[in-house]
Amino acid sequence: MPKKIVSGLMLALLFTSMLALAVKFQAHAATATIPGDLNNDNKVDLSDLGILSRAFGSTPADSNWNRNADINRDGAVSLIDLAILALHFGESSGSASEVLAGWRSSPYEFQQEKEPSYWVNVAENMTSKIGNSVPSGVWILGEIVGHQCHLTFDSSVSFPNIVFLNMDQNEKYLSAFDAAGLKVWLQVEPADANVETLIDLVLQRYQHHSCVIGFGVDVEWLQADSYPDGRAVTNEEAQGWLDRVKSYNPSYQLFLKHWLIEKMPTTHAADIVFTDDSQGFSNINALADEFSQWATNFWPSKVCFQIGYDSDRSWWSQFADPYKTITDKLTSEIPNCNGVYWVDFTLLSIYP
Image (cartoon, rainbow, N blue to C red; front, side):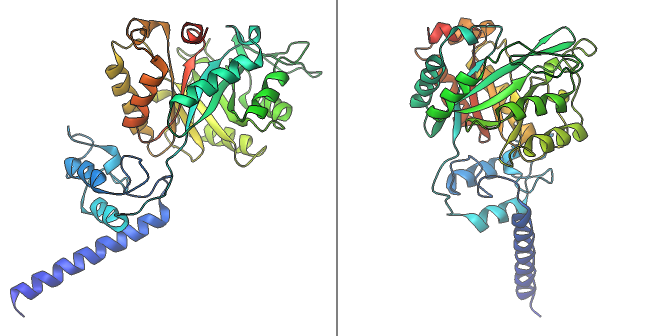
């Protein structure tokens, strides 16, 4: 048989094998976007091909490595990834992923000093500036005090390392958020309290609110008296917390927050959202670079970011609209960016 025919058959066999692998991958794909949509614009086109070509042949040790281009997550950008992209080239989902735009609110700042309308108006104003976004918020209702988690509602039953108020401070706010269509995380700083107990207490109390989208744990404050910057979350307990949260509503997600990747579980279960609250950057590019590294590590899981810390005020205060400027940059450069929240420490500086 002529060599040209043999070579052609070999190439055809190779391409057929690649397509089979691609189809096999497609059946198990975990991403929310179309396989091959590397820039998260909900279509697979020449822009995505350009991203893959620049990273082609790379592994994590190479300077041109791009985790997004490693579509099948085998640790290399190869012909298999190209075949997957080729299979979906020209496809479009028709709509971009929503971005949660809003604030972080805590009881140790001015949470209860402002009426519900303030929080609603700020979230809606933020949303009006960000394309394809929905108003959202991180509502902290469990504050660390020593070894204890202090919850901002009452209870007739006592639990170890948990302290309650003699009244509920959250109902009128959550009801207003329901009416306005906000999407809200209910977050705690757990201290030495049992996290599953906190999940039960919070969600049993507030699961009737349509605004609630899930439960958040600030890992920095997980057994913080015993572990510097909090204890790392194991894979097993993260899955257990997620299962507990979903037992109240299958659509709920778990929100884990820290600035150190090593504090997060190494297995990234679906419906765990990883939130970075790092601060102290020299400029907006330094912030975006570090947040991009966080997002790449957890790809294809959703990630969120807290911004607006006072330690960054020297540069964000120079922007005409700090929230819009930073959020636009993050959402344009980070495909799995799911939400951006301005912290209440400085919120009055931009929304008095």
